[in-house]
Image (cartoon, rainbow over all chains, first blue to last red; front, side):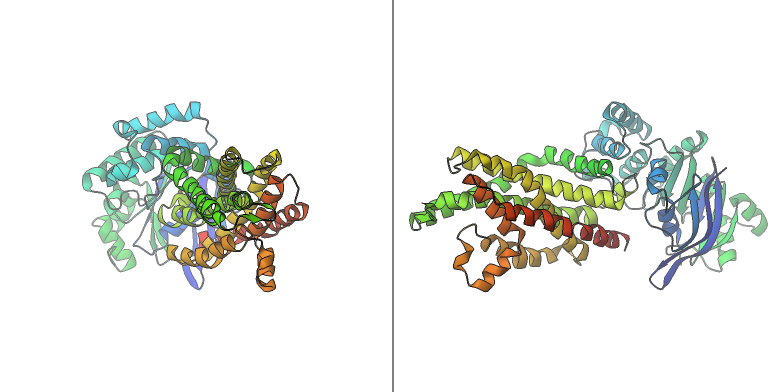
Length: 243
Length: 249
């Protein structure tokens, strides 16, 4: 069964068309990546999938439910790791997880041990009572990842999970994501790092100005076009990711 | 909107409040006491009586009203705006089963709760000072929730419209402060020019002051209670509609 199915998806902001009539389907256990430069429409697609905003046209189904009809039910089964750090600065590290779990109706007797378990998973146990502002960038991203797992999601949506991180922290996040993938969690991510896509994704959709140019496995794209994914991208879209 | 989901937002604010209340509570509590002392004893030495009661007894119930107003307005202007625009707390919450309407309802409920917290504190203080004649004053407490909702609704409508956080100064200077001065807390508004007195009728604070003063004397201000219930209901759709537009922009 497809975890996500989008048909004829369009999103317009006023007269600007951010997502232009795209189709894609993502199956269970897959790691699927949206690849493209800033402004390609990746984040907009993520936001529609996790029901932050409705599409202008087209149909998007997540777990076979329409995003405009059952947003709460869909969100209950999704974990979201946003591009921007939006941890709750009024709460400590452990409290961030417990309060977040409460939005999913997870009672304290469940969420407290779970929060500790997640802190262990992202190696932040010793920071449990620290203030958010005292954490490094890499720690904040790891905590965001832990927070996105409080509801044991079947689908994890990651919007540029490692942008702005140093190579060491980036590898730490990749390592965790590979562990989740091995456990069968479906991963959907956006990135403009080719290495990230090559290491994590089973399939990638290359996006440019709101359209999907191609969908394929990174390896197959490299086999067809030659070189590495960066060069593939250049050949397909006629420009480099840095543009 | 579902109450349970809105309550999750309320619980988040309550968790933060119980962590930080020592620093914020004292401030909100000190200001009304300052007004009461300065006006009650200072001005009260010259204005010995209004409507047959000592000046400090006249203004004390009004301080319940103003304190509860300030609590809801600060919470749902500055507090809400910081959560929405700077801390991105709303984005984080909206990735959970909580929806925009639940979130807005949670903000309103929390603003109204703060109205109760601060208003009730003043009720206790002025009762201890012997400034309240009737135990009926306790009946004000549930009504503070209703007026708290009105102040929260107006604040959220403003939050949905302002370009930046500095704009709140307009709200405070042009709306909140005049209301505080001309709602009958410090003097009966029938001493004002009739036009100004008419404006006061359209402000929620004026009716809350009437309600507090009536209960403090053992009376019930029926029409003022009707006014706040009707207005709370009439305003209700707008914060939802406008905040949705703002958040999705």
